[in-house]
Amino acid sequence: LFDLYNFIDYQQSQRSIKMSADYRRTKEVCKIFSISKSTLYRYAKKPDFPKPLEPSPAITLWNIEEIKKYFEKVTNEIS
Image 1: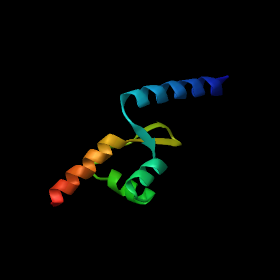
Image 2: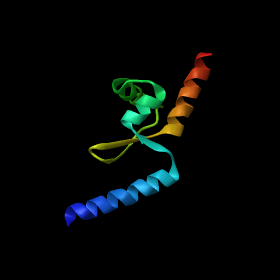
Image 3: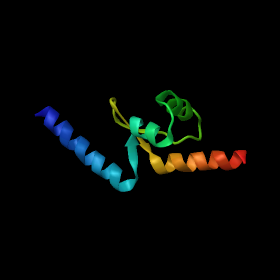
Image 4: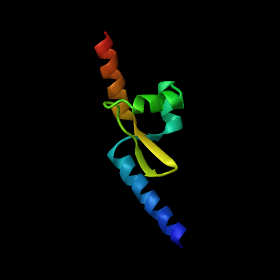
């Protein structure tokens, strides 16, 4: 029963996260931006890089729009 309650809570939190923004798992983010997992986590150490949500120890979610804005900002600073 406890696992069922955790699953229901997880499903509800996933719905509320998806409604507020476009969040993706680490593997998907790496694929979208053509970077490795280690590169993503290297960026995440920078103070101005968007931090992920961790609804559980095994799940990390990243806000795609915020990451896009970060890369646009960095690209504009270089130009």
